[in-house]
Image (cartoon, rainbow, N blue to C red; front, side):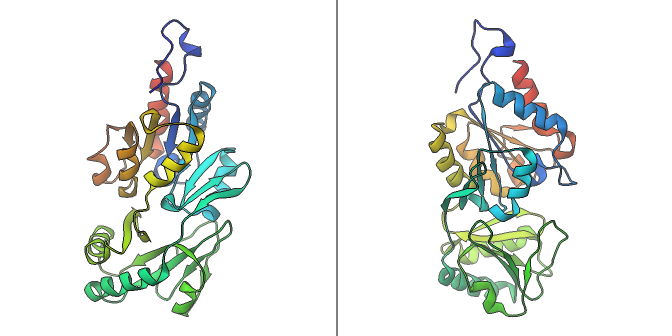
Length: 279
């Protein structure tokens, strides 16, 4: 880990970490889907002192591009739970991993044998891949349109990054646990937020995508500071030198965090960065 220069003034000392990895929802973004001025300023100050900032999100690229543009982010972003490494400045995918649809179908059959019928949605691969919503799957209010279909076969018509699961009675934690126990040898299973249980390519995680992005920057895990709020951030915390959970974080993530900061609505990222900037 790169530390502050012992003989230089504090304002010119290098930032203690060369890489800052931030989740989006519940972490960098406030509840109103905005990024505070305080957090923007803290990230800018850290980057001015040598750090790189990488957004690491469960959202696929089409659902992330608008936020990156608003942030003025022109570097790398890890999207789709690690499936996609995206260069925001060049607006191109550097890597993309897709879900084996046959394995996903087998996994779903196993899961539904335990849970009964599930409502499904799917995230299609690519810079402009649509989120396809099947019968019965809840539709939230968001800035991007989804493709609604009554034909379940439409969900599987094109290459996918992931499949979303929903059950009318099971909690997110219960559904994720049942899916993992039933089909964890075929697919990855994560709970990424309220109402967001996902099937992924086996072995895929935010840590895997972040490692690819960090390698391209010549940065190591030991030089990385990570922020998150959900169980899908656990692999990223295990990979990074220091993992910071938001006050609003899921208990599973808080239990493995090196530090707990203020909530996303109370500028938790800025609180930590400002302390590090002050030395």
